[in-house]
Length: 81
Image: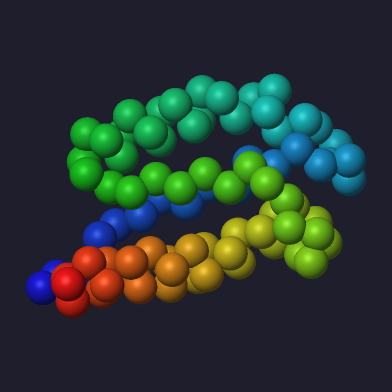
């Protein structure tokens, strides 16, 4: 059982403390990553919801570890059935 898989995790959150509105320019990047990930069988996760416990939006990138842990648990449960 090989549970290793490459992942692209992108943070694109609009927030009042940001100088620019991220959604104004993130669309092409999101579409590009989605297409690339589909082509190469890589999981793509987009975080566009701010978790206030992190303060500034950029620190939401720390959620990748939580996401990967949850994803791994789902895979383990699937193979245990």
